Length: 577
Image 1 (spheres, rainbow, N blue to C red):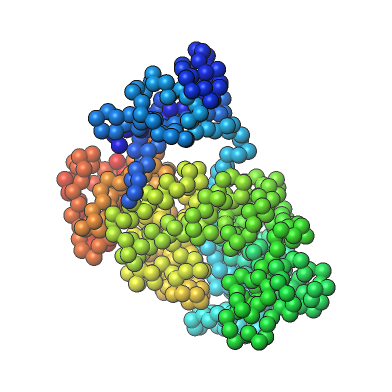
Image 2 (image 1 turned 60 degrees about the horizontal axis):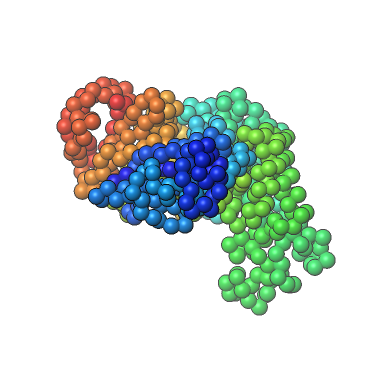
């Protein structure tokens, strides 16, 4: 296809006569409210080309179709109901037959996806509180192990707490972090606290409500946002609600809080089989200790809504991250959003969803989801070498066009977390590959996150090894990695182009496994060059780059471009044009 044009206009604007607003008029002529806007090819994927333009309906409604130009000046009108040949971009009768046009009936402000403005400029730091720092040994649970004395096991406790986080806020700020994301701090029996026993109580091994208030106040003094984590899909088996069911059975006042198929709750005759056969109630991941909550029950709805309101209203948290969000009914999330936005309109609501999530991102549920599809693409190219350069760029393009721009701008960008092996492990301990992955992450639109310790090269495989104790002995820090992280954070803050959605590929060299791409906004253009190969690469530059004087902003030095650019193995460069 050679060109694409958007034909768009108000369906009731027939000021020159003609259809008079009759959308079904087959012979309508003279749709004076229409305009043609030439579209630009935005990107291409393995299967499709994507074209883009901006249009702003003057009267908040529109009918639109697409004029496609093929070989030999062939013109087609691509409409909602059919594709028809046309003879002209202006005069063909089909251009005014609105029954074949797509429609925005009315663009009501409340229906438009609107996320908090601060998120797209935020850099997150995820903390697993039990493993970050022990600031108050007096509240550590029994059998607490000496800090970092051994690799963690699934039931290990090392005494990390909220005071430990407070004590290291200056360290977090020094990295350049502007938001901290804490996995659950409410009462639970495990070290991860996703088995909640009381949503309204800080786990005593972490501190108390006073400690939490100090943390949030101190973070806010440093212009650091605070995001809490909650799981409303299921609750811990030690919760008062589930314990009541265990004690009173079908007579429990909480029996309808859960999805119970029958009593007894456990079929003991099948205990040695898979738990899916043993359990007579719904549970998260067939876990006996995490019964699923019935979020269609009015009592459960109000209980969980008050949980959300409580921590925002009383502690002024800035965001909620919601665990297993895709298994909770969407009616509940719509209520949750309305309730929290009424208290704090700029609160950020983040859902944990690992797959395509457009269904939750239409402006009535979440502001963002954890962008694991982007994680997989970055790791596939830079870490595990399962994608070549062409496959990688095609997949990145596809991910960019899967969501609207305003959704992408607040997407939560991560490379590892408490649920995955650490980045350095995915890179087979190759620090240079990890540095490339971090660099690409921090040049994408969205809100990037570092998992605690990633900045110092902390390693760890699958859970529970990915939850090691933070190392506070600086002699054991990878200072080169830390300097890299601090530098790319500084550059991202300084250069709006690096946060922009405007991205174009200038070179994709499959043979040398290297890419060159450009980020730009209204005021600047920045070119990033990356060699994801264990050999030096020699890349031929386009005419737009060859011979130019540029600024190497990573090293803050001027640079004269030649016809080719040589990078060392796993090397990179960042130039401001």
